[in-house]
Image (cartoon, helix red, strand yellow):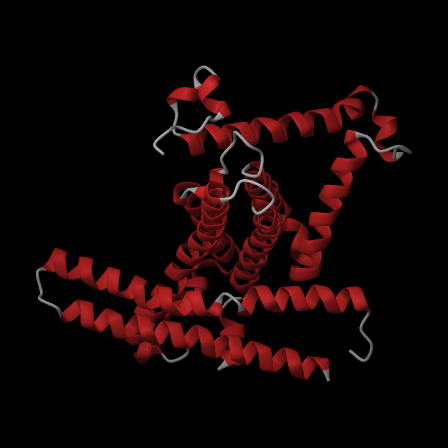
Length: 82
Length: 238
């Protein structure tokens, strides 16, 4: 893409703002969702704090994974622009 | 300061037995149905007029403008396959936007002010995402949960599962939080100084209503597009 119309550019900007402004909430919530899953698995199987700890870590990994993916997507979009 | 605020739906029989957000959601749905009926009324009489646009601004031309706007948004974001998703995206757009704006009229509450309504919208998007994914790729769709290497699957499945479960939660909480927070702030400011000061808050409310509708739509479109692309795309991404 060598030339972009102003309208096109604005639409892309709005799309990028929308998709990257969600990252913070998504990262926090993935830890929370992991913790909830672990808590209820523990309650169901009566296995102490183990599932809570394991799923807390999974949740944190999932959060960083979504961050990583967003970065990859940003990189690709920037490459397309040039 | 304990007094009940007046709500219009309390005055309507049958609707006053329902919780406020359900009653207001019914108001929104009836409103949209009336607009849709008025917009298409002339078309049913003779089909020749179907192709000729009207010169003046009528219910029909206004409706066409709205639908074309949504169609353009869907096409811009999802490419040529976008119109397939027009049904669900369009329905969500009209419902959420009307709900958000309804809260600015005195005597009405936004249905989206309650987590129940927004969760209903987000869970619909979640179910449709996986329905479209399975329809597109068949059973292979489930392969995207196991990741690229098969012996890493026990590690990848919980991570992917959490990643997918977060989507409806974040969608619903974002919409609910923004609308509820905005109305709460406007209410507090109105309680402090009811003259002129709530005005900026209400302008902000209008802005939030538009932006949050757009964010909800853009994210659901991104999820649908991700379900269509499937796991080949994931491997490229690394």
